Length: 358
Image (spheres, rainbow, N blue to C red):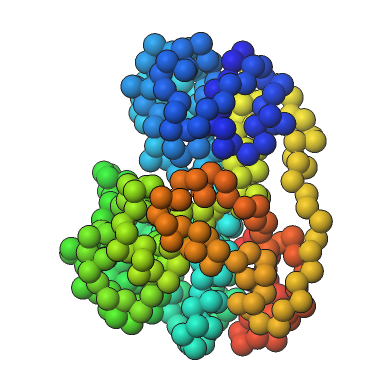
């Protein structure tokens, strides 16, 4: 069996070698010709998986090791009886940690108390749920907006979009969709951008296209944190230069998330090929615990991983894709011991640095 794998897939050699011959290419370079004799295709987000790519190939299994689905034509795969496996949720904790790190730095730099702020979370799925949990440990009042969940679970705990957009801080965590009952393309657009004021902190760590960037670049806010962009890597230079943090779509790029993306597809491929799971694969990433000796929340989180470095790294926009492909190793909070006693901070308890939410 022959496998085509995006060369940015974490641990592809250690995880997938037993399935057969592996061929790798950068995601943007995988094309129909390169797939003609491949049965397995494993990608990240840079490969558009559709009829144009797959027609006439031997591909019978497609695995995507990232959380998003907007690069996958699921309808075509279903029509052609091609098995599809996704890693939705693999990077949820990493993205939630990114947002909390941004908030801790903003609170320090703008001299405000996080426990006095409201946080509108637009999209309360894998990422939004974890962010909601962590934000509440900081005493932040969260305003949750998720119409699909609200439809199933009822109104309790949810707010309409306009109410959530009136929060002090607004952060987006929806997929990018163009159709259906709840399309998210330009979810923040001409019909409601006037709700964003010069006192709003606006965050997009979801997908480019959820916020209308043409309107955003001409709207004065308190601060912008932008990780996801329209037309990556050719990003909006005006937004990039004015953002508090402008990062190259790396919020979910922890080692933990990359491993989990690969591991989720590994398990599905084992099921597809009726191959027994190897226990050692589950333990490929197990770094030593590191102690952090800082005295404040923002210093502690910056010592774990300084996202400002990611912001500074793409001051030259031309470095966007190269930096993303060669991203520094970053581990999630659970791998660290901290001297800073977050239980003594206002409205904060020990659960903030945990990986899961209740």
